Amino acid sequence: MKINFTGVAAVGASLFLLTARMSSAADVETTDAPYKPHTPTLIFYLTGADGQKDTDVIRASVGKLSSASTLEVNTTRSFARVRFDSHVVSYHQAAQAIADAGKTLGKNYDPYLIFSVPAYGLSDNAAKVDAIFAGKRLNTRVLVKPLDKTKGVFSIHFLPLEFDPNAPSPQGFNGGHLHHPISDPPPRGLGLPSTYAASDDGWDKPSPPK
Image (cartoon, rainbow, N blue to C red; front, side, top):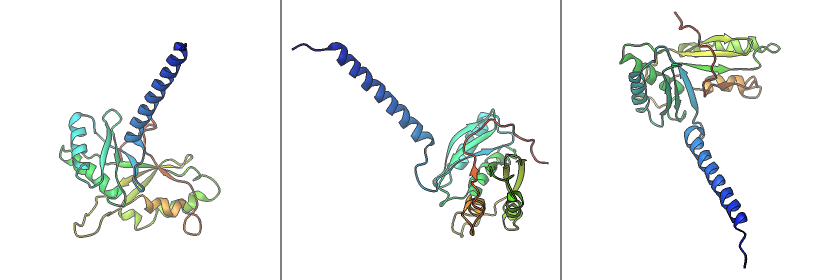
């Protein structure tokens, strides 16, 4: 019987490439893919996180939170990417852990999120969304500041969290406090898509608030 070595080689090469692709895909999934419901990856932009000590203290502080881990600390762009279960700890608790890390180095990181409502500028959406941003309860937890109203992009800055060890977590501001009233279907919400940034899009960071 004659064996077509060319065909065998081709099949072997195909299997090798398929295996390599599957391995590469698995690497990406373990790094960035959500692995549980309500487990966001968030990017917190910071002020003055510019060295290895910043990386070390941020990872150590975030690591103390149940379910939380630091995926990346970028000291060139000054941000941290964090993943956690928001039904276990809140966005606010993650931000506070980062802020507390900065204090150990005598720094005010002022961690903030980027929140987008792409349809903000259409129809009368701006007034409705602004009314949600102006909510009294919301403003005891965070301050929402416009970065680019034409694109519906805002920064969310966290006020100090008064953590109660006897109260159930999550505490303080959580993602649903904005996402639900803005994105849930009417009449519960405005029905407008909204997102919290999970990666660095290379936009120009604004000057730190005074």
